[in-house]
Image (cartoon, rainbow, N blue to C red; front, side, top):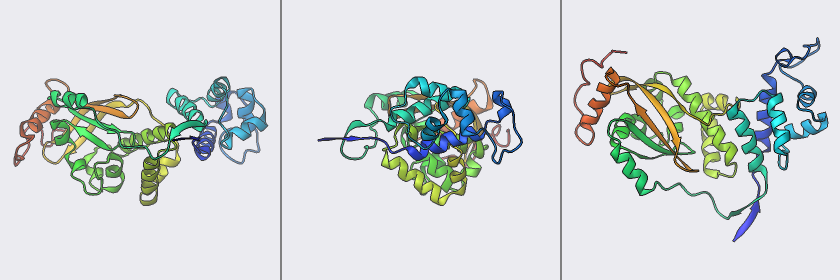
Length: 297
């Protein structure tokens, strides 16, 4: 049996548009600053003028009434607010999620990792690789991924969830050399996922849990920053291998799963550290890391 549903994401629409309006100053869009501004950023009527719509219409949009808004008008609003590519996609995702659609009853099940993906993970021997879902649950990993992410996967607080580890396990502040930068990415990716899937009760539950327990998460969530494409460099302070600087890249496998790989520059100390971790995967941990890695970064 199917029912007609729509995502009730009016609060997300309202807060996102208001936050993006507040960060833009009049001078940035060629408007006079004026002398009686009580709040930072643009006024609603100024955004309306820039987008070519009425103030009443834009006010209604900023109150969350986004269902049925045309792509042309959303594009105009995105240009007026100077949205980046990921932010524009997020705005369109919010509009898409607000439309009535036919969905089966019940909650969204945990994604299954196909056997072919597990074979791929096992074949990747000199990079750490993880498969996660949109809620940052670690669903599968190769041997080197399990070794690198052992503090996360062994955390009783995290329960195999990277977001929980970041914000609920004190050890995360040591494990990630740039904890604040990594935390911002986790939240921005969760925010983008929430825009795509406002009906996902599991995701909403995770956000509610972290917002209640962690002020650091709550502050970042309120910023409404979004991120869709995730790649860069990250340094881990691994309990056995020391400080390991790796390049990472996340790639979507399908609508529900993401593959993230961590690789080292050939010939670097980080490559030696990955080889060290690979040498004891599936065996008893050695007593110390290789001499070059300790305190090398």
